[in-house]
Amino acid sequence: MRNAMIIDGKDNVAVAIEPIAKGDTVTYLCGGKDESLTALQDITIYHKLAIRDIAKGEPVVKYGEHIGVAACDIKAGEHVHEHNVGNHREELK
Image (cartoon, rainbow, N blue to C red; front, side, top):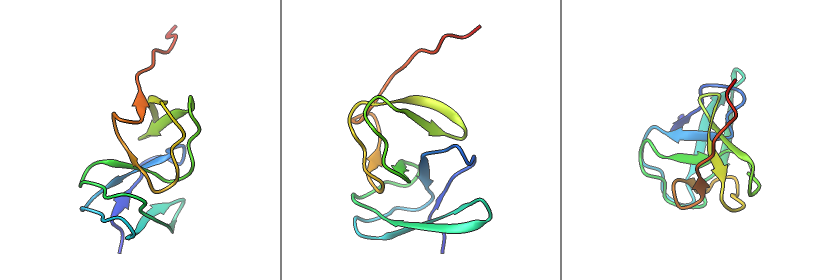
């Protein structure tokens, strides 16, 4: 059963659609097939978790949009929130 979702194939985070406990299997639909990983931390409903490793300084992408940059290395399955994501400004033309 799916307990997280992504909207865009560029996303590197998924959104929990129910509370997820550390050690739970996280399942989400990506590219027409179910993908799974193990939650490394408790994830509150509607919060984000990394679906792949995100290196420090790399953009965090949700719904196909950059929402910040990783303030530290984030492992797949970790909670992604203000404690490990910094703000960024893009040059808009």
